[in-house]
Image 1: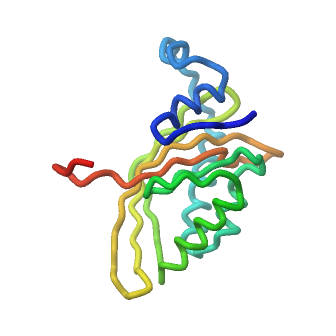
Image 2: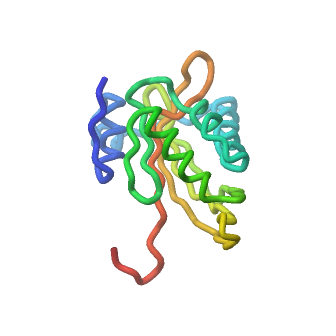
Image 3: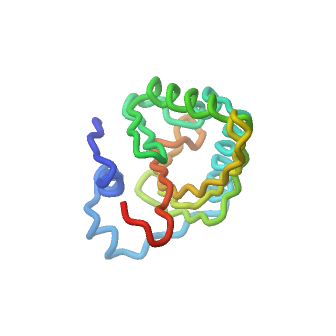
Length: 168
C-alpha cells in the first residue's frame, strides 16, 4: 500500500489506510482496548521518550514499522518519508541538543482496525548545544500496530501548537 498524504490530510489518510470511511467510524461506538494493549502502547511511548533522552536515532527507528511506507511529520512540518529520511531527521535534531527529557501530559488511545491511533501532548525540556534552555510542547497523533509480536509506529505526526493569540 502506498501512502500519499499532505500534512492536513494525515488523519483522513490514517482512516483510509484502515479501510473505513470516517463517517462509518464516527457512527459507531468504538470497542475499548484491553489492559495489555494499553500497557504495551504506554511502553512504546516510554521507549520513544527514552530514545530521545539518549539522543539515539537508531533506537527511535527501532520503534517504527519496517514498512517502506513509514513516515514521520516533524514538529516544524517537514514530512520525512521512509526510514532513511526519518533517521536523517533525528540525527539533525539530536545534533542540536545537549540534552532532552520528555514528559507526557495528555494521552488517549483509540482502537482502529488492526491497530491503535494515539493522540497526546508531551513537553520536552531541552538544552540546546549553545546552552540555551528551552521547553517545547508537542502535540502528536500516530497510528501503531503490532508487527511480529511488537507494537510499532506506522506513522507519527507531531507539531508545535501556536502560541495563544498568534496567527499562522
